[in-house]
Image 1 (cartoon, helix red, strand yellow):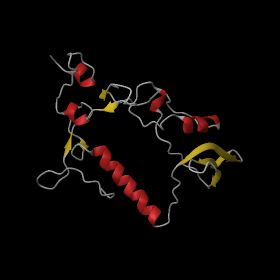
Image 2: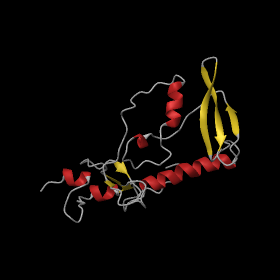
Image 3: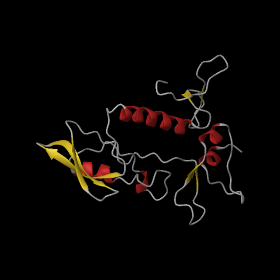
Length: 184
């Protein structure tokens, strides 16, 4: 891959693939139990390369508060610097909003705590359309919250499910998607 993600390879050097999501066909490239992590690192490395070349200015620790519309078109945002508390204006000919998902509108979610739909809601209030707001992916292989020290669900490795593992609690009560799909 052009971004340097180290996908697994067969002994002959070709990219290896396997099934994901319970499908029977091996069609997905993977990075040996770290696919998501490796894709994230590859994308972040490509971003930081552009930052280093001066092509992109990155504003970490900022929160979008509102959209700036000029002549009915989105031309910028108002943001709060979360370190200083100052309000800032950012303008451009085009505005691309990459705000992440909004899985945290649900009680149980493995999404990051910041995935709370605020940016998408502000865009919608300013005229942006939602194609399918009810189509939110919830990962079925979650380990439930076990106490007050754990604020989010823990994601169980997808590879456990693909390799035919069946995860059950000590008392034998099935809690995972894999268990419900398993044949006796």
